Length: 94
Image (spheres, one colour):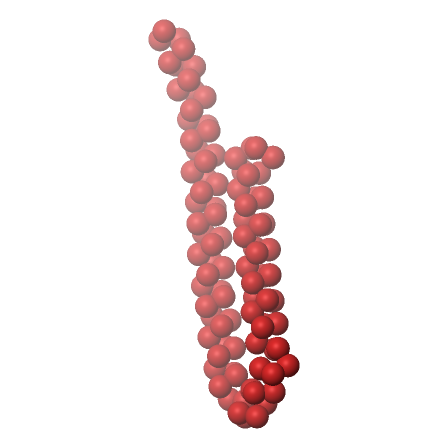
């Protein structure tokens, strides 16, 4: 019985380390992406605020704001997918 517990303990330590490493990597990536996107949105809002009203309305009528949201959403998805694949690679499941 002691041999089984010792074997399980030796197996659990590397797996726990890998899971914690993958979670830490994911948290750092998500935090970095969140901060980057908030900075980009802040810059966009400040630059868009300087546009004349007619230009801003024309962009809105043409669907520019929807396109901007789709582009930022796609960037967020790509980074999330990259983070997920990197985390599974660290854990050794892929």
